[in-house]
Amino acid sequence: MTVNLETAAGQDAEITRLRGVALNLRRKMIQQARGKGQGYLGQGLAIADYLAVLYFHAFNADDLDFTRAERKRFYLSTGHYSIALWAALAELGVIDPAMLSSYGADGSPLEMSTMEGRVPGVEMTGGSLGHGLGIAVGAALGYRLDDRSSMIHVEISDGELQEGSTWEAANTAGSFELDNLVCWIDCNGIQADGPMVVNIEPVADRFAAFAWAVKEIDGNDLGQLCDAFAWARHRVGRPKAVVMRTRPGRGVKRIEQRDRAHFVRIDAEEWDDVARELEIENV
Amino acid sequence: MSEIPSRTLAMGESEAIVGRASMFAPFAVGTMQAANAHDELVLLTADLGKYTDTADFRHKYPQRFFNVGMAEQSLVMTAAGLSKVGKVAYCTTYGTFATRRAYDFLAIACAHSEENVKMFAGNPGLVSGYGGTHQANEDLALMRAIPNMTVLDPCDATEMMQIAAMAADIPGTVYCRLLRAHVPVVFDPATHRVRIGKGHVTGAGSDLGFVSTGSMTERVLDARDALAQQGIASSVFHTASLKPFDAQGLVEFAASVKRLVVCENHVASGGLAACAIDALYEAGLQRPMLKIAIPDQFTACGSHAYLLDQYGLSTTKIIARVGAWLR
Image 1 (cartoon, rainbow over the protein chains, first blue to last red):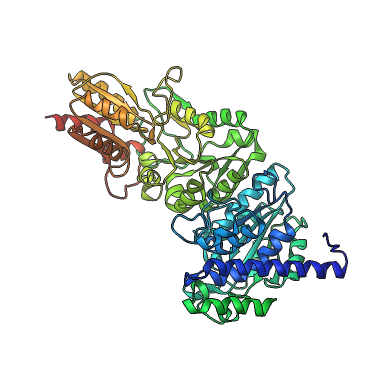
Image 2 (tube, each protein chain N blue to C red; image 1 turned 90 degrees about the horizontal axis):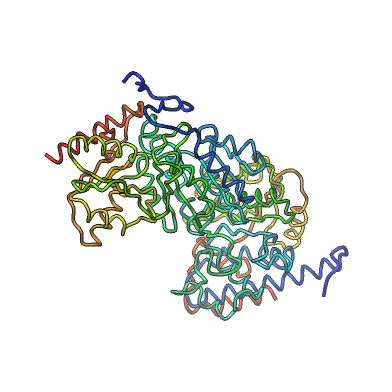
């Protein structure tokens, strides 16, 4: 079962495996959104490749034991990406896949936005945007203080770069030289009111100016994601930022093509076509 | 009155304490007790370490001390993250910045996840001479409104020291007003024990009952003595704990007196008076009530004594207002 990632054939096999995982995550997201007419499906589909590599390539079984103190930590700052997190946790077997259809339903733990404390693997309450990076800074400080070797990973969005708190945290991390911290920035180009309403570019240069090591990748390219995780493991005396360019709705053409994809509306009769498109495009 | 400064004190200056014992840096003393007992305790500040009695900790535990700079949102987020990986994070800044600036972070990053973050917030109410920017006059109301939050307003050095020592063992997120530098000793540290969710009654006079919190209790106890000279017998219900609040204790106290005077170094809404009124109303008990609190306005700059006098919170003004009310 184990692949030798030192060889080209081994790397190809790993990418093929991860492609299958990412497809399963997208299937599980459509399962959640299906019939509801709406959901943060665009963002979820865009982040599927990243979560596939994070949970199924970079993390091992110890890291996925959410009670283990020294595990790698992952903070999902964008609480509205919960649809993607529920898909990943179901794929990991942390939650029962049969629960997925309860996404957003009254009383369901699978909330539209992540609330810490109800589902294992939800490491922070996201959703009030601009919290994740600062929380990850504190976790990284704590790990460094205790000489724990595991890395702290945090996902934030391009929209969160408009929050002042994100830059307070970025400055704290740079000043404290937190080289056990990796910030993954999902640059999908959309926010609540549509395409980026104020400029946040150049993202990589801005983090570099805050004394971070930076790397920019295609966030829907599994090979580049694997390479970025390998790069992020190296301790270089600085926190690391990976700018991921992603495409909202990735994997389903009709969703990719809708420019107001922050909160996707899909008509009731469209869902079979959505599911069919995912299979045609990705299998 | 020449010993009372007639000007706004500079940031590092400490008010002269006249006619009462005092203690230097009780927060530091209590925090060191907690730090010695808890290896996981860390202390953070946001460019106000010099003005919040953090030096002792910084010198003994430099690795466990973090100054994030002038960034209160980062202060609170960083503290929340440290808590997530097993630390108990004591934080210091001023009350205005902790509450107004970093409110969402105390509410969501800390209280929502029940993080072990203990915020010690300096310059409560009129303790600061720097006007509306620095006077945390509504901080208790803001913090009481957040679920899961413990909200404390210590009276003196004894309570400040005891709360700093015990805060690491209070579950979840705590907001505590910070009294720094030379702090009066009002309660005897040998016998007084501050209790979360409990009040502390002094005296048994039933003509009127003072209900008081924080540094107001010092002046209330002085006013009580002066009123006794005038033949008015009063008692005092003091609590450092606004949330949880000792509603039952307050109601029992109120039942033993003819009328109530609620005194707080805070605006009249959302603080101690609100706690007391809620408790009395729910118990179906009515007492005439005089509220002595900071008025609903942005307050001025000046010396502590000047501000207390201007806004009616000094011992002299308390005595005069109570006397007028009783007549």
